Image (cartoon, rainbow, N blue to C red; front, side, top):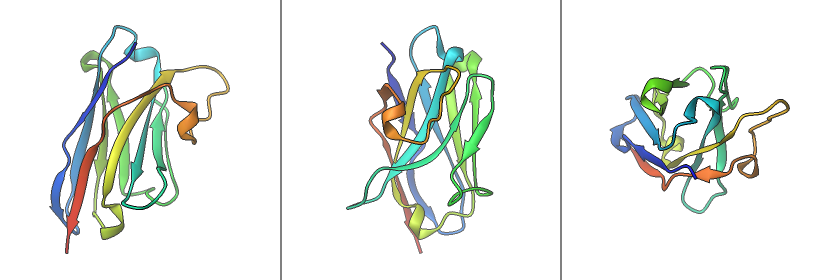
Length: 125
């Protein structure tokens, strides 16, 4: 069982930056693929990006160039750095995890086994 706890959300001005963290329990963190999703009010949960166990990261086209995903296996933590925040970035951000494997795609919420409770990001104009 893996428990995920997101933190770092809050109220940020448009154009600002934010770093979200997701701390994972357990000893096998380095073997997990970690994903980030977000869900705006009244909308479906949306894929943001993932980072594989080997450190390869991929971001959705909608956030590419502004969002960066990284991980620190020594701290069992994955990060989502958000730059140049826009109003459309306002959402609850979730991290997710599953054991990595060949053929992992990671674009769908159904690709992940474990989820955090989410952290709210609010963007003020």
